[in-house]
Length: 582
Image: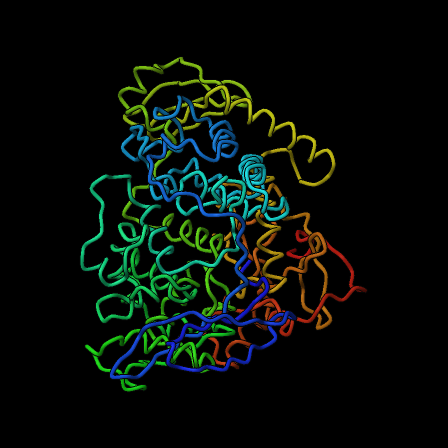
């Protein structure tokens, strides 16, 4: 997404003549544009050069209104489809359902994206990109906006989130979402506030902030982020020009991390984090203030540091920004190629917001409105022993209670136990489950999955997606079992997996054309493949790492595993994993 056509953008003083030589980036000729940046210190000018994706924007921006979530009536096609798919009931101004549930079990029409991301019912949907629900939500965004394509479901979903929660503006007629529009510092700061703050008539900006950045529709939302942004009004670095100019990805990431994970970020050990990992395009340049002679309290100190980084990108980033990239990498927000000096796009930033907010522990993780709407006492009263609750595959029976534990008999006759109120599906959810089961049955008959269990099929989709991404180099170290589906197995019987040999004689598993080496999770999604014999793969992996001073055996790329073990020997014999382990 951020790797679309690139160009350079330079922000300069009118008194400074600058000649820019644009480079060829990703096969497309870069073009240049000039903006004005009024930043002076003792008659010295400061210029910022930001490499950015080509900003693609259609239509005029709609009004930047702030309306309670349940009272929004714009983007009608998107909104009605999302309400239907997610089981929202009620009318404008009085809605109930997943998107309006709160951790305390209440319903709030002034809900925020921040809260909704902690509702397991929505978060599971957002995480399961292969589910029908996810695809329907993404499709609804395409039906609303002309500039989305059906193949890019991630961008569809991010623009759907943006449109439904009214975070950043769409076009005035709401027919364009402008996912590849590059964002200013004002927009990024405002977006984060609108994603986390209930609508209030009391929110306003201070006279001091307005004087520093100028009058703007973004001010009342943006000011609260001034204290956690990399460049701020404190030293004069954030002024009307920088405020309304494009923000770099590194700055956006720093602001997110510093706002919601400040303590963890502050205490992060850089040496440990980078012991077995290196960015392709970023490195720690140390304390740049000391290196370039910027003193604490200097006017526009942070802007000077940022300028030095942008002008000398090959030298690396100031430690604070570099640490934020490392932190973001550990959260799965960035890969080894960070593109840190590029401007950030709208779809990209909405994606980062969902990543950072969903992990923020200041909001309690909770289950859907259907589960939380009843206390344990209320649930016991409504569903006494002997009650039957309709499930997609039959009826579940309440056998009794042991304190807050619910003793249940599942539709297949087996007994189970759950602590706390059960989630009771409504008719719409049951209908969707039935439709999903039909598709699962069909996919199983077509030989696409080992069985017809929906959970197993979702887990298999996740296994295929993550493993392929690792093999293709999009993930730079072995995925752990926690990177797969932790709720369900894939349904694979490990004993039947095929074991073959590599060109170096080592054992490997071959599954659907993918070669699974030592330390990689097997297709069941839970356990790693290993051969711990004296001459086995585990010994080879440890020796290779030890010889190179690599402490983390699970910090290797797929190409490194290929170097250790060799590629698949196509002439090698096949055996089952059960036979191999005999």
